[in-house]
Length: 106
Image 1 (cartoon, rainbow, N blue to C red):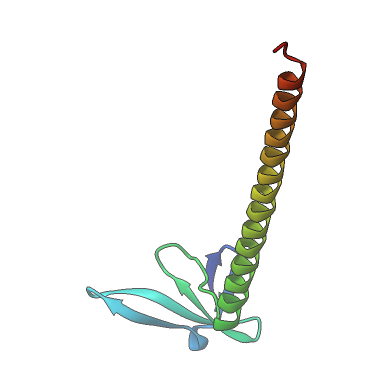
Image 2 (cartoon, helix red, strand yellow):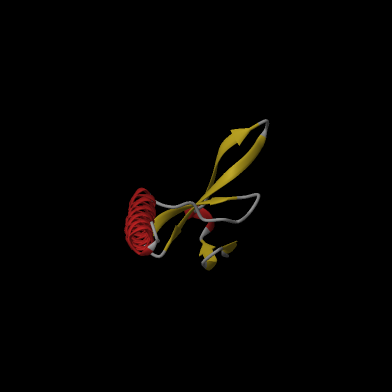
């Protein structure tokens, strides 16, 4: 007989002898351990969510860090473009003022 746990990645079937409930809190069990897909997997009993393995957590963190680095690089590029546009506008304004002074009767 199998026990099924539904998580974000579908249903995992656990053999009773490979299933254990862990981590009691206030008399309630809130983690379930299953052997599925050739590896031990932990599930939250309240949500059915499968907890990430250490390798999956590291990969997710690396992905988040890479995305943050890309956002920071894009922000730096945007700020650089803004500075160059402002400097170009100020230079053009100075040039126009000089031209007006040259042409003004005086």
